Amino acid sequence: MESQVEAEGLSETAAAPAHRGVSRLLDLLRRAWQFFVNQSSSSLTRRIVVLNVAGLLALSVGINYLSPFRARLIDARIQSLLQQGQIIAHAIADQATEETGSSITFDPDKLQKLKPGQSYGPSEDALYGIDFPINPERVAPVLRDLVSPTKTRARIYDRDGVLLVDSRDLFGRGDVLRFDLPSPSAKKPGWFERLYAAVRLWLGRGDLPLYHELGPDDGKGYQEVAQALNGQDASMVRINERGDVIVSVAVPVQRFRAVRGALMLSTQGADIDNMVTAERLAILKVFLVAAAVMVVLSILLAGTIAEPVRRLSDAAESVRRRIQSRVEIPDFPRRKDEIGHLSGALRTMTNALYSRIEGIERFAADVAHELKNPLTSLRSAVETLPLAKSEQSRARLLEVIQHDVKRLDRLISDISDASRLDAELQRQEAAPVDLAKLLNTVVAVANEVKRDDGVKVTLRFEGGGMRSFQAPGHDSRLGQVVDNLIENARSFSPPGGSVRVTCRRAKNNIEIFVDDDGPGVRPEAVEKIFERFYTDRPHQGFGQNSGLGLSISKQIVEAHGGAIWVENRMAATAPTALDPTSKVIGARFIVRLPAT
Image (cartoon, rainbow, N blue to C red):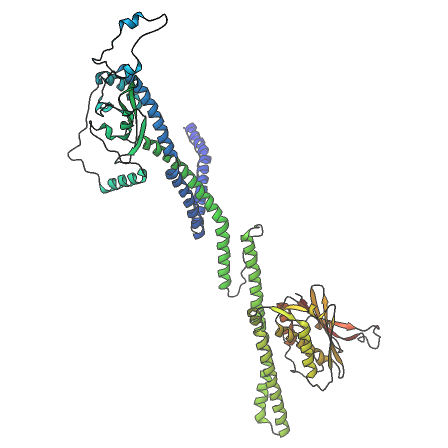
């Protein structure tokens, strides 16, 4: 009993690995099937599969219906039947003809006059006139023995085109004849069978004539038989009502150059069509295997295209629906094809979009903060105005209100200009700008404006002729940049000082320098000076500047593919202990633009 239990335990232990192997195989097949189902759910995948299989199907149809296989098969069959017919015709002429009452006469005098080595007999012309009719009784056994193995139909006609022997009527001794009569209850061919036969006849007929069975006395109605009775080998290709190709040849039966009749050999049933069908079935099998391989390869190919595109599409949709979180675009760094380039382009575009959104959010927050200060001051002044007891207090409050209103107007104008700047630069087409003409105009306008400080603006060019200062861009916005820099420099220059504008051509760039004689820029403000709403003007009252001029200038220059920065100009002498800042003699703003 214990040995039986141990044997059962061993058998279960041995069967466990096999069971696990089958389970793993089934799980692998299930995953593969699920993978193909998921891949084929993509419209791109279905399109690739359909197009590839359609091309393969068109190729298969062309091979089946446009290949010369059928024509070559018919030609080979004609040659085979001609050779077979010639052999049979010679056999019939040698063994299956009989002599009639015609006689051959000899001249005794000519026989006596013969010399040694000479012969005497009837001439070929005399023999040509002798009639050797075909004997059906002697033809039948020869025809049956020669035709039966070939599965062809043989018919022999005499010189008048009358049928003498038909191989369909020849049977061997002891053969049991059986004829299947149609059943009385047999149904007639339905419309589908008739339609199939009509389509098959239409596809296979082409320019082939239709075969008709003629009567036993109308042998000359067959064109090949008529030619054979004239002493020529002939062949014909026809098609019957069922769409089967019938190949027939006719050869003359001759003896002593006299045509005694004609032998007609023809294929039976769908002999050629069956061979063509077998060839097409073989091609169909190859097509099915190739189609299966093509479907698998197409799905795998589409998986390398459709799946990454789907992931990129989902990520783009997530970006559109984003509320708070930042969506990362899938990255395909190992792919060096168009999908990898698309992924990189989308990531760059998305990062730029997020940067733009964050910039807009910061801009909105800064605008709200900057507008809140004058509004708060204005509100306090308006609320305090009714409580003022003296005209002096009332005038001071009105002055504050007027100052805050001007400040709001200035802020709103600069904010409006900054907000529409990007859209305006995107809409307008860049054109070559003559910076020499532009700078001359801006400097001339700046000098015409009367100021109490008496600061003058000068302009000079370096490194090329006047035609060397061409840059692509928008002239009005570039003029705004130069005007902002000049006004900023004049505001920091001491009374009676000067602002110097220099334009220099440096290889493929054009640089514009705006120098002033002011106190320069504090080191901690060099990086902040181009920030939005930042001001550092101790010499001016609060609220006299919106802090957007330099920020707008930087935005315009970067939109033109350039750069802008500021640096302090230093004096040649070193600073002293009493005046450590004496080395700074002014600020210099530099704008670099790409030249045409």
